[in-house]
Image (tube, rainbow, N blue to C red; front, side):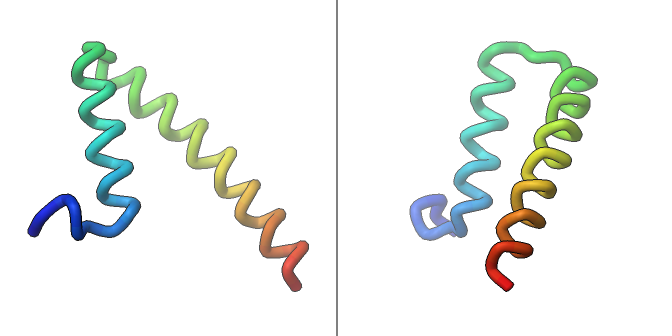
Length: 53
């Protein structure tokens, strides 16, 4: 499967992995940061859903 035709979430994941690996960010740091990002975006999504209906 070509990345060009991949879903947006796959493209973003590949970009993030590349950025983190190029900068040699430790795996534990990445996972801790991703947990924070996930919570933040889950709240944003919930707020959008509340506004929508």
